[in-house]
Length: 334
Image (cartoon, rainbow, N blue to C red; front, side):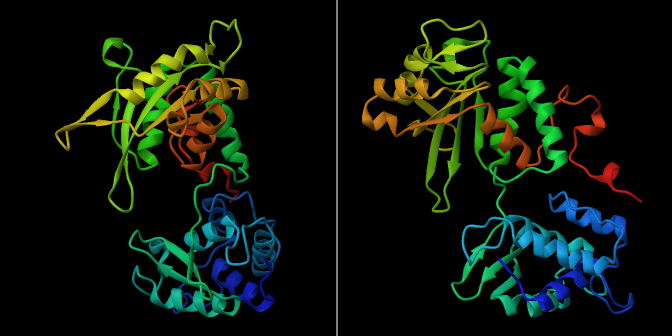
């Protein structure tokens, strides 16, 4: 995606805050604060000491050159930058709704066929004017990770290598699914296996239509494979076949509705890798209806989702407590 040079120059002026402190609606940003803005937008760009506006314009052009789905959808990094730039807490010489800043931003974006607006969550989104499509910078687990995110990912992988199955559930999965919008998340635990009925966790998700889907989770700490002999930390998919069948066939009690309901989908989650052979074996053992209800998540899925959602790493996942929280303060040169 390519923007006109005057659009890039206008956006760069907003980023660096060129203008009078008494009248400008965008705060002045020195080199270190420009770097902070781009890192707050989950990118690795750092100001190199050159002319601020020239560097910002070139960096935004580089952002726009990143892969994107179609001509109506800018790259995610650019959407995150706009949202960060329009943070209500950065309002200057106007209120938190930032009408003047929004007008100035839209004056530039409309040349490219886009319009910015605030939603009820106080975040700034883009809309493609021609198609009226709303562009959202989703927390995609498939996007490139920044250097800091890669460090956090390495720490989380090291934690999973030594974590128990209960640690995986309580420290990783429960916070993750709460962050993703699931609710009434109930962990059966491993102290009373008689109450699990094939489920380690059950939870529900409310669709925008207000319909509710119920999910059961079967969690294994290590690798899930289909070989005849498995290692001490691995699990054979045959071991969870009966548990999945129980999960899909057993009712759970929803105290909010005061009635029993069936699980709509079953998550098979492994703290290690789920082999393709294991997925196929389980699929062949279940009938067509039940196959459509099975969802798989392995370590890579868990770790990537955990990182992009910005959750704090569990205790013991980092060498020191300061590294557990997602902050860039120590990495910004002043």
